[in-house]
Amino acid sequence: MSETATMAKAKKKVDWADEVRQLIVLVLAVLAVHSLVAKPFFIPSESMLPTLLTGDQLIVSKFPYGYSYLSPSLRILPQMEGRILGRLPERGDVVVVKSPREHDDWIKRVVGLPGDTVQMKDGVLFLNGVAVPKVPETPADITVSANTDCVGQYAQYRVTQPDGSAICRYPRFRETLPNGKSYDVLDLGETPQDNSAPVSVPENRLFLMGDNRDNSEDSRFSSMIGGLDLLPAENVVGRAEFITYSVDGSASWNPLTWLRALRSHRAFVSLRPATATLPATK
Image 1 (cartoon, rainbow, N blue to C red):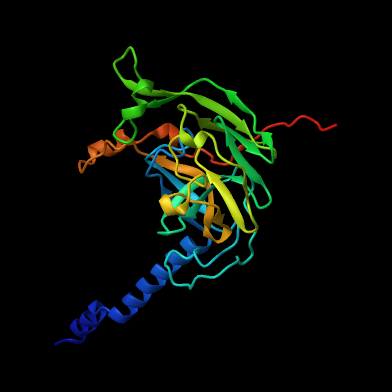
Image 2 (image 1 turned 180 degrees about the horizontal axis):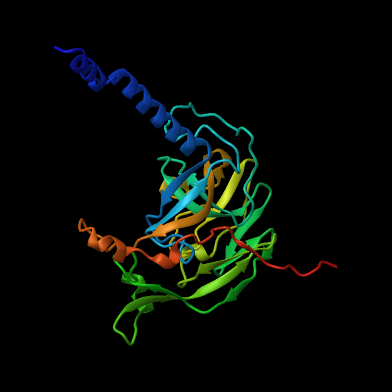
């Protein structure tokens, strides 16, 4: 064999050990970003309507509240209290949390902080004995799709438009928290969770609720029956920042359906609540 042929054969030889090392470094880098900086999150349910639709893909930042044993993307740390570089969320923040029993990822809005007293009266949120303003707005019109449909007990809200398309036309209200954070909620009718006894939020706990007030398992429900209960602060994963893209559930294996399934108007919608101008105190 000629010298040229020998050199060519040597060049073609793959250093598999080096390839494996590079792959491990890449995987570790991705895990580090997911654990310390940000991670994607896919909305699987309607508990945060009208703010979030089933099929929305979000970016969740991991660093605003510090890090706990639940922060890594892989469950590698033992259970422990507290957070490194930790601080509490603000009222009104939309956060991804780990459920208390299965440690699944859930997304809710923070309404009560340690020291607060939270109560529901006839569908109105009360904080520390004061009603949170709840102002009626124009209904939330949500297009019926494979991901979203108002069926069963909510069939009364289904409307057929002149062009034959269907929407869910839900009663929408604007809530404004004491810190000025403002956001929309749905109130679809009378439900048992519209009224509750006052609950005092203890140290290192949070009271969270879904914006779809009649269709959300949250801190109004005990963890023993599938709710969030008063959630430990360690269970907060991160803050929802913005929607990257959204799909209506109509896509199939056929690539031609992928673009049609996109809800382009949802891309890059911020999830940080607006700040209303509060009246001056006397």
